[in-house]
Image (cartoon, rainbow, N blue to C red; front, side):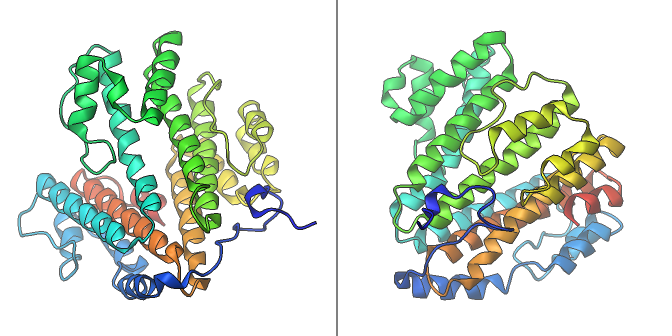
Length: 345
């Protein structure tokens, strides 16, 4: 009997799960992003930035690219430029994507980010505010109105459900961390649910399942490091069995690599846990998680035409923008070059 690709387990692939089939409706879109990929910053360019002597030198190495900063620019100008680049790539993604359901799925990320922010404020008796992203599906003014009037019925049903879950989680022990866990769970569940409604959804579902796994690995290490309560910290829907992750809470760092040896995430856990134990830092696990996800996105090179290369370019471009921000912010704050390299290398 052939295994349903939607039911793949952690042992059904070696390094990366499948990326799906070609869709020749996307021939123009695929050709466009293939061309734009050649203009992205190279690894060498990023390492040159990281090894630069100071912020000015690091920023100067970007001259001639879309990230060029004016002479004398500071943190405010940097953030403005990066936000503009991020908005531009998001608009491009929405223009290229033929399936509006996929656009809606990725815009949901901003809805949940807005929701996380407003719940943190309201549940800790702070003003609702108005500084919310306008790049989601729910208008920010609608979100603010719902909380100011306590009229949540004007919001989409999945947002209402997330509000209920996060509020109940917070009042268990009045921990803001529980708001984050609840929103993470709601976002992951809704993302997977919506991804399964998309035609040719193998890539999108596998992408979200990988993201669930990587979030769980980071959470496992953070909870262990903080000695925090692991209950409700993990997300459902990934490839890794929940029992394996729960077992990781109780094992010493040096035993975690063996626990995940039969999974594609063995190196992430082994190197990330080792660095955490030696340095008390999550830099390497974050870097390894990024590398694994980018590796999966690169598998879309085997697709001649389809939404997969467009999604992969979009996410890789967002990662590039975050990396530029990370390096330049670190240089602005005079952080040690080794720390920067540990995070991006």
